Image 1 (tube, rainbow over the protein chains, first blue to last red):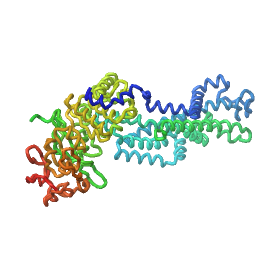
Image 2: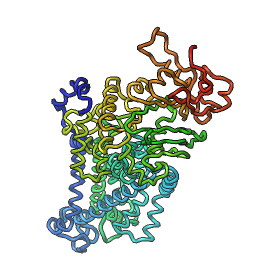
Image 3: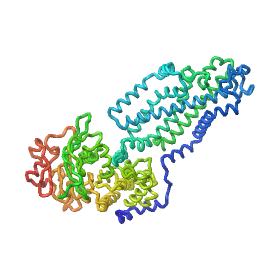
Amino acid sequence: MIGPSRVAELEMPAAGIETGAARPAQSYWNESWERLRGNRLGVAAGLLIVVLALVAVMAPLLSAVLTHAQPQTIDLDSTFARPGAGGHLLGADELGRDTLTRLIWGARVSLGVAFLTVAMSLTVGTAVGMMAGYYGGWLDDVLMRFVDMVLAIPAIFLFILMSILIRPNAITLAAIVASVGWGSVARLVRGEVLSVKQRDFILATRSIGARDSRLMLRHLLPNVLPVLIVAASLGVGQIILVEAALDFLGLGIQPPTPSWGNMLTNAQSYFFRSGSLVAFPGITIFITVLASNIFGNAVRDAFDPRLKS
Amino acid sequence: MTQPLLEVSDLHTVFSTKEGMVKAVDGVSFELHAGETLGIVGESGCGKSVTALSIMRLQRPGRIVGGKVMFKGQDLTRVSEYEMREVRGKEIAMIFQDPMTSLNPVYRVGWQVGEPTRLHGGWDAKKALSSAVTMLARVGIPSAAARAKDYPHQFSGGMRQRAMIAMGLTTTPEVLIADEPTTALDVTIQAQILDLLRDVNREFGTATILITHNLGVVAGMCQRLIVMYAGKIVEAGPTTDVFANPKHPYTWSLLRSIPRLDAERHEPLKPIEGLPPNLVDLPAGCSFHPRCVFKVDRCSRDTPALLQVGDTQRSACWVTQSGTELKGA
């Protein structure tokens, strides 16, 4: 050992504490996870979203076993069935299609588009934000002015235009929404990269001969990840609302494919005839978005070091 | 004399700012021989850190606009980025001022200390980790195997600096550049880290460039010393000679502004009057002349070159070059 005498002499007390092992090694991730688990409301909201996601994935199974109906099967005998009547747990619409079945299949669209949109915005936004923040200079200027432009486009007109040009399905719809959504992610990531980049460990890592790609992916990305996780979990609820709104306006998923949004469009004509047609999709959207937001807030409280008390 | 290990000649590094071009390093030349410890001293903003970063070509956003850095027969200012990466961390390692932010908070210490061997030796994770543990033990981290599993926030400042030194040594580099390695640490820890650097120098034969603003550190550590002011070397020579008989008024003033145990009479410390110059708008002639108590007319007109003054020292000063001794006042 180098300098043993001096080290032994000066570090005695430290060495004593050392053997006591006051606290096991806790990574940032472990700590955040512990904090998240401590938030009961947040955990409940997260579980609800997981359940909804499972429902969406198992839609074919559920509609065969639970509701015994297909989302697009017209049954003129049970038009406007009341909830509970004729085996329709949540009633049926003007063509006798089972509302619960359609909600279950609609979850595929709503949640699928939401997750896909968030994934796309995060991927593109992170890549752009990281390049801009890391390299700086003219690349930063070009990329961020482009982001400014994207964010300055009135989203609703872009959506209308795009849905005329491309007939939207789940994937193209996600791409359309993400084509605007990545801008704010890019800004967020760039800001974070600019602050992390100043820290000495980036210079230290460069001084051991790491290449740019390694610095960005292995050293910057894990440090930016917390804000990405927070952005993702808060983004889901927002995107569900946007997607529902687009469907409602007829710019999203087209009937007869059920989505929560176009079920509402359909229901507005029959509001006074059968209120449940409006109520159930509305409540579903409301609860899902509320759960996403509560979960998103819980994640932010757990992962954002700045909020650590 | 043997071939120097590292030879910096007439290095110029500039930064473009809104106010104008800052010549952070303005014609710096020095040599580093195998196994020696060289001190670079100067106050904040005199260009000592930028000099070190320029050797590693990490001076961004600054630009190296002139000069050479010869290392093992190649000019580091001209080699490709790929070749430069091979030099960084493998042949020249660097330690930074603030150990609190020098380690990545999301990775375990052992992983980070082993990173240079994974990058340069192509070692797998297991081999790199075991070498990291060995090296952590050698730099005096108790229970190194267990501590390697810790995250940086579980290390104290002194331990982090030890870890940084361990990281620098894993690839047994020939040159270690320590940029104010003890500035952010308290005094007892400073002594430990300096001891460690001295032992590293002795055991591994690593040539060390020690950058500091602390003359006491230089006195205890370095055989040779370079004093920088406003981007230029103003004095260079063996540490004992420079301390005993400074040949530049700046060094002379610096030495009078620190307390000495062996002073005959305890007099008040004498600060250097005035402020360091604005690097965008340097005074004409010698940059130090507005603060210099020995200045003559010529000092505000012509810039002195770094020339031999006395047997062992070099100084950039019209006064001492003309044979006048720095005394009194």
